[in-house]
Length: 360
Image (cartoon, rainbow, N blue to C red; front, side):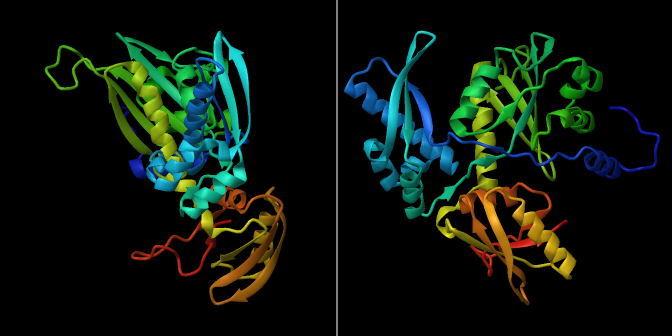
């Protein structure tokens, strides 16, 4: 580790770096959450029925963010009878593989989710930039956009879970800003600086290596992946282990999808589809209230906002919607100018629904 001659503590250095290289909110709208492709053996009814079931299960997981959603009895029954939720299907051939493309009815799927008091993870989702270094028998390699592996595996699983992603180009610009040592050491400041050109919401740093087989350890001969997720706030780390490197990539995607869904999904039965009311609790003057109203009007799913009331809880706004209320709540959760006021300890829900704090 380099030695700093400055009297600044590591904490202050971290704050300086993260303030200079903070991530810009740039959530991507994922428009194909309710459709998927399943490989089939033939065009028989039995093959098609099985594909429908697999496809609907995938859609329920993608939309709710809950990989255990099929354990709910009514969801399980729906998966067993998928035709009731079907909009259309068609076959296509890709690289000698027969695929069945299936699209389900968004309203019907969401209705069942709402009836079961489950969460919905809306269409606006954070864009993840993956920085990966793989150490293969002492040879370290930075994974770039266009590399066949592991990109294909990560993209396939990200598609299943509805996670937008990017890989770095590793062109001249990237190579002048970032070294292999920076990535292998997972040094956040240079990685965040190099990430600015891609405008991601979150940065994923991963280093992958095989445990030294000369060590007498339960981890001997296992592949290890050390992942760091940098979002708004403190970084989150997780370690993955597998017998084969190929097993690591979908596991990492699933972990990230579970983490993001838990953070951003919204209880489906808590919102209306036509109007949405919310309260901002720290509005101290009219100028701030107008700024908040202009901010709300800038959300694409909002047709118009108006100040509904001023009360001891704050300023309440009523939003007339062009799109789904979930899309508005998604946009709010992904914007660092405003944050939701979380329930106090012991409360399942806040005393005031849709209560926010303005950060400016």
